[in-house]
Length: 328
Image (tube, rainbow, N blue to C red; front, side, top):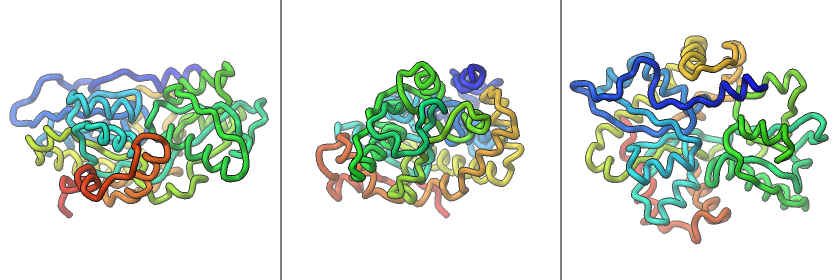
């Protein structure tokens, strides 16, 4: 499992062969992607770069990979990134109510696509066994954080003790924490660790699909800095259009997509294992529009302490600005 953990840890700002200088005739856009290796974050960037979608659309994308959605929010708030992909709605709402100059401009992932794993010898077999246990998430405000909090709330509603949530980091960090006994269960996303589950080295004890309230909620969204939107709204719109174009291509060409993914992210997982990811996602779950479940995102932000009170209608209109979505 050491090799797998290593394969998930990639520090990169641009793919092999890309240039850090703006090319003539292209509009530079600085994008923060929340993790370089996970299916929903790194893959659309790698595909758009490999297939020339950005260049064809007149964009030069300068990519920065963060440690998760919460870090992505901070990159956009600071202005170091114009757009941030795949960040949790709760984190974005929390930043907005604190005065951050951001807007939510599209959906990114609809539904909660997370899984939690443990060691076989732990005796944990299903979500009820997680009551009172220590569970990992990536960072405060991330979708994995919201998932743990929501799962804990679900267990409490069933009369069971709450989960002890701990910020650990990404899937490799959670794997290490589980192996060393720091936590009882860690989080991951398909296809990572599925091979270990099949081999009996790990067991899956909970799935985001068990939290039914999130099936039709845009749990992760794309955000943008207000100054950037005011200065170049067309660039924002074009980037979102390419993002959707990339997902359409990925689902139309899964075998070629996983080859690009494996090579660009330097993954040690086989193409066969990577292809199993498509068993866990439907095309419509990775659409940029419509953005469903705004009311749930706002309620969660209040419930879990990211906002003191629900947003007003004016605040909702200001934060959720879908005018940058490509025209049909």
